[in-house]
Length: 390
Image 1: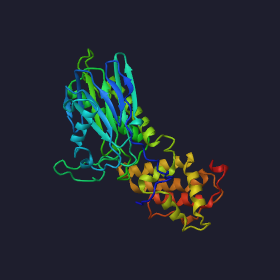
Image 2: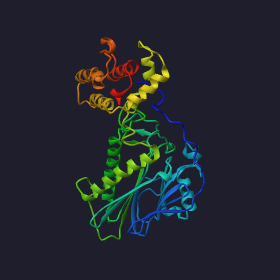
Image 3: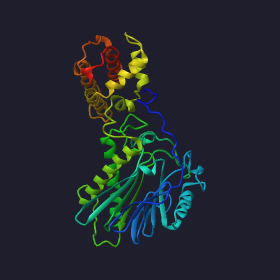
Image 4: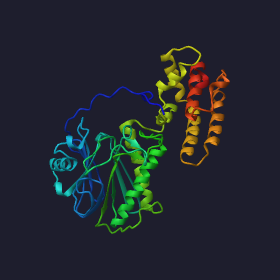
């Protein structure tokens, strides 16, 4: 719809210091798996006789002989697979495994732009069952909704984008058959999507809510030596419940650490409208054509203050959900528009403004989102910031 800069865009952080770090043990699980950070990688060192199912380019798929799973932060500045050491992703991961002291033939790995210092590890158990999720994540660049327009058409396996990614490693201290491990991936993916939905993370490629990033990866580990045999990882099973809770919690923690993405940070009208192309620049462009004092810096300051008002965020949430339901075919557009415009007209009263907008401020030929912006811009430009909006 509209494009421009993001609301309240922060200054870029100083470049990360690219230096090797000593091995740092993060957690050793009761069954013997060791999780540690070394250099720019999170490493899960596996005891013997572990089943693994991964989406990795290196020894991916189902295996029973792997020694480690690596989650690596790619070097700064690398944008394509051929720019990696070794010339492609598989070769890079093989070299990386060897540098970390593992046999490349018995190693697997995943890549991300996320900082390994921002890893989130969550374990949950029930009786003798324990599930651990190890997650790094970033969606501010590459977040998307399944079914969004594609970014490329792959030929001969040659294309590999390196952007924001949610990488998930799940370790289960039970013996699962191959088909159940596949079900673990289904349940974990649903959990990741639930976490993004609860945070209202926007797609960067459509007006939808993100369901993941375009480059997410996953690895599942189970213990063939365990006396605990499980065959169901779906939502009705206790295993499925634990997977869901671990992944939701760890995904949210990872996004908070990596991107400062939290329920509180998302309590912002401008962030809720970001997926529709609305930003500060567009709001100012609308306001500058309205009667009143055209002081841009004052307008932007007042806009930022009003944008985090919970009453306005609540109204925005209701209005954008009406827009979503139209796009999903759940509501007819005429009914949704009528309900949305009625709510938009009530915003001055909801926000206790002592000013009344002109009758022709809203119209039937512009979109619901545009009308919401018209009213918000008018309120900021003509309202009096103070106790009534606090």
